[in-house]
Length: 249
Image 1 (spheres, helix red, strand yellow):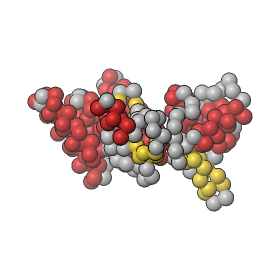
Image 2 (cartoon, one colour; image 1 turned 45 degrees about the vertical axis):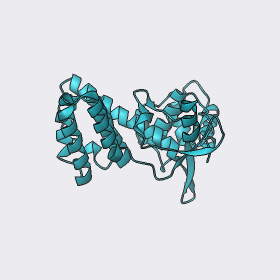
Image 3 (cartoon, one colour; image 1 turned 135 degrees about the vertical axis):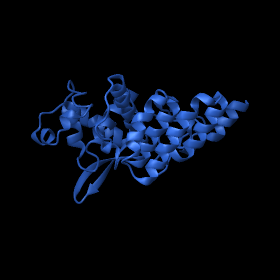
């Protein structure tokens, strides 16, 4: 599927994706719209979905208006419908998951920051276990990019309980943070790029974009660290060829 422009403002797009995250492959369009509406529907409350950060974001819109936004997200390739038995369920597209994965990783980082500011020592890091591997590694990449040793105590606690492959990456990030003060900026940037090779993982399906200049499709490279900014994941508007030609013009 080809994508030209984000059909909704970025803040709305992220809100809808966050609402969808709690019901992926378990709920459909109507349940997603009810979360965004802030519905008091019994099923929604029984599932604890009123705790979703996007709950009630569109409380001033009708359910039909919200459904139209959800359908627009599907038409433009950020969400998809997948049959579970006979029931149509909401799932992320590769592009939608790339955005939501980055947002969830940022949420975890902010959660750690709040805990550290309040001198809270986590009782357990089990909540990070069994999470999507791509999202967890992106979380580690964000910690690495901070260059801040303050995360080492939390990382050490996490390292004790996770699986072998994740523990190895946590250890690599800890060692990198310990080295930060001894490295010049160019060496630090090189180290981050080396770690990005294992921490930035491609989604199962490629993300196909359409170049704003030449209209040709191209594959978005999720492993390029340049696309991960302080403001979130940024998609390129130009294909690699047009981008290079623009730089040389």
